[in-house]
Structures are given as structure tokens and as C-alpha cells.
Length: 274
Ligand SMILES: [Zn+2]
Image 1 (cartoon, helix red, strand yellow):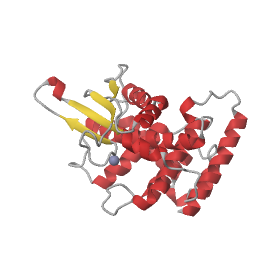
Image 2: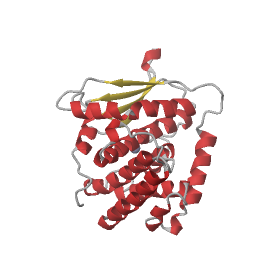
Image 3: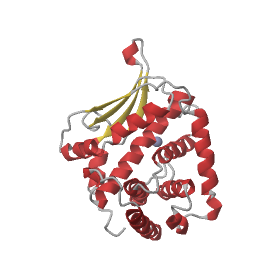
Image 4: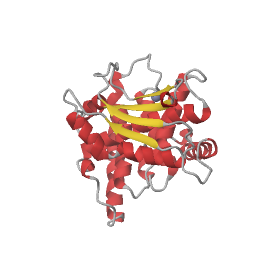
């Protein structure tokens, strides 16, 4: 794992450097992404938010959830959604670094993994992300060839996945989908920095735009940032719920983004040796 972490770091810098050289006219990085540690955390948080959007899309559009399919398959598919939606343009240095951040964060999360976790082991999640990025454009992401194994068939997997997403989930009408509502609860218990980081990152607004625009959402969907522990939530991890009731306002889907998880990752030093 340590070796893979180093390889990622090594693979990341040539890409970043080549991109910087190639795209002088690239947009100024957002204020929140100026230090590399923050870019990596931002990438991980973005990935996790889009992972929950994957659960929402599967359930809302195809009726796929823990009652209808195996949880490990669903979790893996949610990661696929996140990666597909976030595949960076090779010239987008911040986008590339954010996705590397998501992969690196999984390597960092390794020691916390428990056997009961329905998600794939962290190393597998990191490899899945890297495989899809590489598969999206093997030439531009040639630096990742060191990590990616030929038998993973990343290019084919990526192409198949994209086809499936477009065929089964994309909005094929010329009407926009149901708009996603974004809200931020006032942070408490020392979560102010995490809440500000989330706002500055525009991750939730980006997600609402990406998903509301391109997918055929059929239910009102709320994207809510909050202190999860204060509201009785257990571990402060992002989660997706679908609510049904007699009144129209009781019927909606919700993705909860917890300040606690952001706060935890903001305290991780990605530069420190693993
Ligand atoms: Zn999940």
C-alpha cells in the first residue's frame, strides 16, 4: 500500500507538471484549492458526495437499492458513478489532482477498514478510480500506466460503463430534470471551518448542476450539509435516504453531507509518510 501511495504521488506530479506546461491559459484555481493538501481533501469530499449521488440515481431512476441488489455490487456501482461524473479533462490540473486525492484518501483510510464494511477495501476503491481515469484517456494519463495492470482492461471497462450510464440514466429529453435543492445548516460544535471549506469548494452546487442537468430525476431531491452528530446521526458519514409519506412535501430524496467528515479529513496531512 505504501508503494502504491508513492507511485500515485509520483504519477501525479508529472501529469500536473505536463498540464501546467501545456495549459498556460488554464483557469485560475479556486481559492479553496490553492494548497495541494486542500485540493486532495476537496477531491475526496467531492468523490464521497458524488458516491451518494450514485446511490440516489440508482434508486430513483432504476429502483436499485439494498433491498433489490447485493450491497457490495451497489457500493462498487456508486463508486463508478462518482468516478464517471468526475473524470477530469486531462488539461484540468485541479480536476486531475482532486481525483488523485480521492484515490490517495482511500489509501490513507486503509487502517480504518473493517470486514463488515459493505464497501470494497480501500485499496480496491483507489485502484477502481485510477483504472477509470486511465481508461478514459490512456494517452493523456500515460503516467498511471505504472499502476494500472493490463488485465484490469480499464479502457474497455470505462467505455462500457459510460455506455451503460448514458443508456440507462441520462436525460434523453430536451427538458431539464428536477432541480436539486442545496442547503447548508448553520455549523455548530467547532465545524465552522469545515462548513466554510465546503461552501468555498462549490462541490454541492456543482453536484446539483451536474446531476440535475443530465439525469432524469423524477423526485424532489435535497442536498443538505449539516452537523450529523448533533442531529442524532451516528458516525457523521455522508448518506442517502428516500422518504415517502401521505403529503407531497413528505416525498423526497435526501443526500446528507456531514461537516464532521470534512473536518476529519481537513486534519489529515497527505504529505506525511504513510
Ligand atoms: Zn455507499
